[in-house]
Length: 299
Image (cartoon, rainbow, N blue to C red; front, side, top):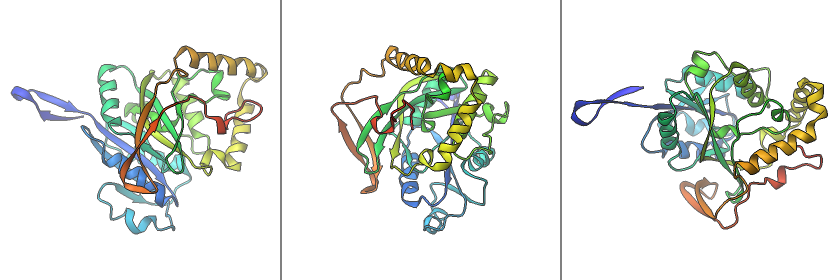
């Protein structure tokens, strides 16, 4: 934290954010992501973009963009890039935002206020609005505190809405396991649970995720890693999978996830990359219909 002069000479501490974006051949989406970080107000921040050497035109503009700290170097995948960014980060609060994700207006100021009110919480889990590739509404995704049995079948948060204090990685040493290329988020959250890291749900929507159909979580490698991860769960947990899925849904029901009121959101879109577009949502839903598969798995 940095000290600044306040009223009557009293020093106030300003929370500094470090946002890490792993990048590889996602120039169009990255431009929207960068814009959504840059227009956050009321906070100090740095935006570190870890690019693995994109050859799609990204480097033609990225290294000249004063809004970011661009680092171009080979890496061993997305989670290695995030770890590299975290090591470079100078902020008090860290987060990572993929190229196909954005922050909503006022997101970081809201996160700052949450951490101010909850000094013992080290990881905040906020909410995300899912949109399609054009920016049109798909659904709301609230977060839940991770459950040791549910997590194998229902990942309770989108990582664009995860914010952590610096100490989680720089003192506790809870870095991403780079052996995973697609499901590192799952195993990182499991490591937080095992270490007893204080986490809390922040009931605020901070980000937007673009469900383009080409997201990393839908690749064949992600499917293989999902199967490998599931095999790591205790046999009795796998046997009771229907129970955990129902229990997860009941937790969501009790948390009010399915009782949404009309709302709006503003994001950058491929058609409007320099100015946010406002979308009205008359009938919001908490169900991500196109990511449900017949056996109940969340794709």
